[in-house]
Image 1 (cartoon, rainbow, N blue to C red):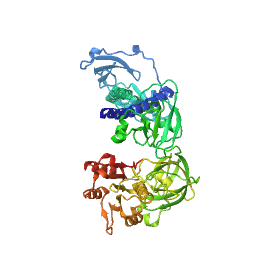
Image 2 (image 1 turned 90 degrees about the vertical axis):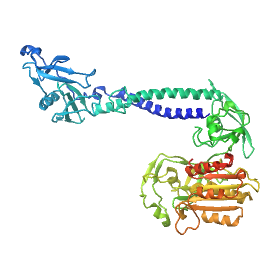
Image 3 (image 1 turned 180 degrees about the vertical axis):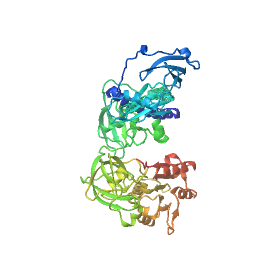
Image 4 (image 1 turned 90 degrees about the horizontal axis):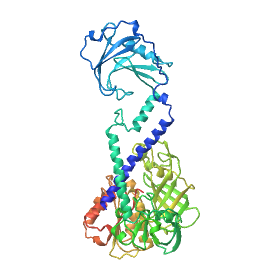
Length: 613
């Protein structure tokens, strides 16, 4: 299975590289099709003059009388209406490759070298535009406008509207190229089209060879992936749109309904077409592991499911909706609700409770109460527009944290963002969210979703889908011996707080619970007073805050939650009956999970909320 996983990873990266280059080929091909080839060749102001050349007017010196070393070829040429012998001593296969040659006056037999004034005169004869020619200059390679050329050239810049430059052979004065802005654009397109990113001046280079190998590997990995899909029974060709009836049971409520969906659709798509929405934050790519459903009959296990689901879940029949087709099932249990949809929420309160986190309280405008498990989240629609880089209603006590950020705005294209609910469904008729105002490192762009939601005022409305529940307490009837340990940091406290309050206040659970919560400073602690009061009121709940940048007045734990958790794990604790709930930055959760696995905590007892969704 690891080979298949590696093959899929390689295939996806190769498809990105090959796909980008294919787009570049398409774009440059369209350019070549639509461009004016006369202008693109630099010929807009180029004049091709032909003078009458009569040898009878000259008495030529015999070639044998010229004192010179043995050439490989001799040719009679004309320069400014006068004949010259062109002696070539060394020359490559192509004219632009290095060569050694001389001119001799065909009348006097004397060696001849082209002067700057003569080069300028030849350039003037080849130019028909309105620009003024500058002095000719003998320059050495390399040349930006003539990458392949390896020999010295006369260069004449022209002051015109197209930035023309004329290049002449250093020995013969032959006009080799007119380069202007049209030519340079065409040259750039040629470089992109032939992948000449190393500026070799041609198409026979190592990048083309590597790209050919990448394309071959893309085909091979695609073939391997296709075979794996066929072996797992996931590859079925359908030449018509056949619909199949599927019986759907909704977990939690026990209700069921029959839906009709296209056999060729994925289960995620098929259920969504009948308004049965499985949670998903990756769009069906198999990378978020949220679109869970339970199959009545056995289904093959894909590599994505092996990566995203535990062995216990797979053994119980849980699969991912994006990985299987409607044609494979006739009855499923959906980890969802049939009435999950969009709701218009009205803001009733918006208050900064830490320097960077706002507590946003909303009510469903329709008045319809929402039922959900503690730990649920909602998906907010963020419209395109212009947001503030920093808040305009910052409390004075927190102003010191925002001094480095200018009060400017930035534009964005909108999107969707997910935020966990801070409360459980029966705690209040309001929906509470912690919105952390995300600021980029360069200070020029804030978080699109956070700066929009945190700027909403009382009475404003916003559209949100959900609630979705995929991170929640495993059971509300756990034994008295079972312990729950919650580890959170920053705004990751939101779903943990909801679960803790639900267990204590709604289900009156008696099993031990511990919250280890990390923040930077005292000002960054969320619901600190509320949690301290909860610790005092409930004997089975322990609250342990820890600060990474605490002041000298702080009397509690210092450092990160990992350090505090390690100290707690050293005490007598039955790891086989302890559940661990993690929410916070990805790096923190990975480190904590590794720590727990290393000391023998079963993977099935570790639950994580994907804080980055």
